[in-house]
Amino acid sequence: MSGTRKKDLSGQTSVPQKWLNDLRPGVDYVDPKYYLLQGTPDHLGRLELLKACERLQIPQEKWPPFENVTLPGPPEPLPGTLISAPKSMGAAVKGLVFQLPAFDLCADDHRSWKRKAEQSWRAFGREQFGPYLRQCTEARRRATQCGMLIARKGMRFSGAKREAIPLERRYELAAKRYCLGYSWAALQKSYGSVYRVDQVRKIVTQILSRLELRPRKLVSHRDT
Image (cartoon, rainbow, N blue to C red; front, side, top):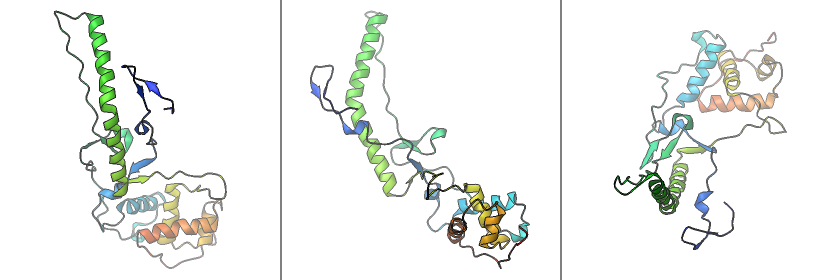
């Protein structure tokens, strides 16, 4: 919305409201770990690592000794909110409800009713949109503060800080390191040396540290 002043239906000058354009869409998502009990291990990471072990056909006796790997259930909405549409991966503020005017069978025709409906809708927008959007802004602020919403991290595929290792491959690298004892050099070679050794080391170390896993005895894997 531009910064110019506009006139409403009554002819009075109005000042554009910040709440109409203060939230960027598609920048946050609900963190599933928010719904796990405090102190619960990273079950999502555990599941990804087990899936990697399965894809790599690693013998099960070498898999991490995880127990009771579960995913969080359906999230509870914020106070006064409802779960949003399935495409959203998040929670939504309860929507506004607009009621059309009744059609007077004795006094209305199609044109008069449409005119009343349009007037009612414009009045509804003037009175309700502002408070509703301010409520949305406050709901997002609270959700971010308490850790329910986290920023969606963008992936860089060019430049010095590129992050070109897909999620599945990251956990495959971690599985090879933990279960099979691959060295850093062997891990790099296992995917054609397309990733830097320091890049592989950083990602795998983060995953294993988060899951509280220490690699088994390392082997050279010279033939890999």
